[in-house]
Length: 324
Image 1 (tube, rainbow, N blue to C red):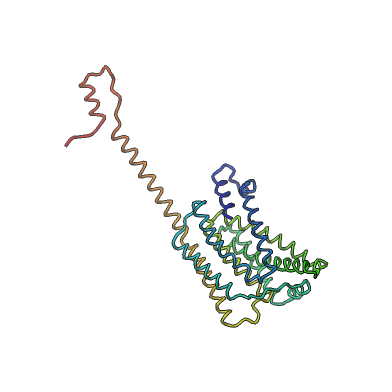
Image 2 (cartoon, rainbow, N blue to C red):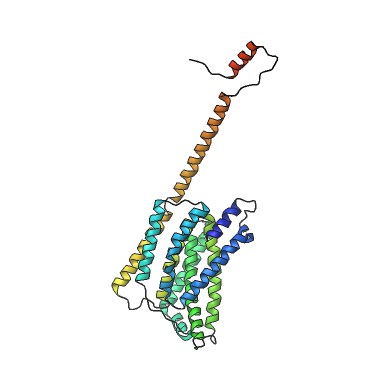
């Protein structure tokens, strides 16, 4: 994502700064290729572990992306950002520690039975309504709030996670000798996975275009992690039978994650405005001092035919310095 952000920065400084100029950038497409390889690794992991465990394991990318954004993109990072990232990491650690550790590889028939659960149907309807509402607000009022874009990404991500785990599990079972490819479900889930993943890239790039990577990356991580865990709970029943303590610690991990996001995103625009105002004042003062100095010590050329008295007079008039 930082490669894509670098591409957006380069395009914004060029003449080709239209809304879709990044599609012509080789650097942007290189960033897409890197993301694809990363997602292939994530896709493979879903076939061997619970969705609620795989998603939070991207914790290290939060710190790595923040450092890359500062070093290579020139973005600023504050002590408040470091605190927020730390809280997000601790929250993700608790989510991993107290999530289900038992991996499962459901068959196509089991997945069909999961799709018929009333709890999942209600959950899916709620997600669809929320997605449509956010999309309407964004298009109607031209909002550029990072939370709206990344909530859209997270809602799409929940479907992507469900489909990715289902397809990956059925592929693993097929290679193990239990053929699942004679059922229509793996193909349907694969199409849904690709469509929702492409839509995520679209909204994620809009967020990266309008906001710093140090904001987008941690926020997207927390939203996507919670969305993936909820998908595992509602569809794959990964939290069924867990104790109250485990559920409480899971909720506490969510709370720490939200604290981290708030710390990272709050008052960032104020800091940026202060920096711009300070730089503007410095430029004005530098220009004033430069102009004043040049006027104070400007010396007019003296004609060779001029007498010494005239030259002295001209020089004294040109340089208004009075001895005390």
